[in-house]
Image (cartoon, rainbow, N blue to C red):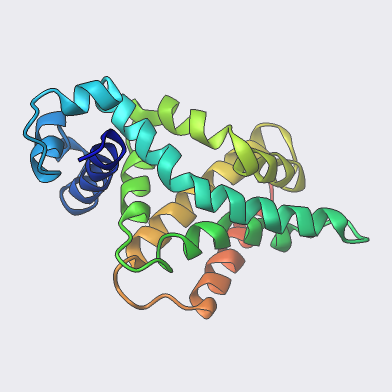
Length: 196
């Protein structure tokens, strides 16, 4: 087994453990066992720590989401008019929906909801949110939502809403374009609602 394969097996195992049993159930030892790693230091070698493993999962899973979101944002940027809040919200939500609920066997939305809900992991999550296309769309949405602390808070609420909604549908077979459209509509309502 190559290092890359062992690493990927542990990423998949960790995501599965968190999605099915929650963040407290994920230890490096349990991940190694679930991934079939006989080497007792394999997870330590590849990730350094539990937080390093969580960061590796976020990085691994967000790659395809980031690329899809970047394509949507590039299309919006070439349009003649300024993108509407709904278009920006769709660019935030749809790539994540397609790469979680829309990907057979995915457990990433449930993993992500656990990360978003855990205050001790806020810094790790923030580091990944502040990178790539998600940072771009979040900045644009903060401005569209009124800017300042209120705009930031609204966008944070939208990220939480989308994460938990997608976690709810992942693996259920209930997801459709209509469900994603409704989720986007709900997020737009949060962003454009009154400031007070």
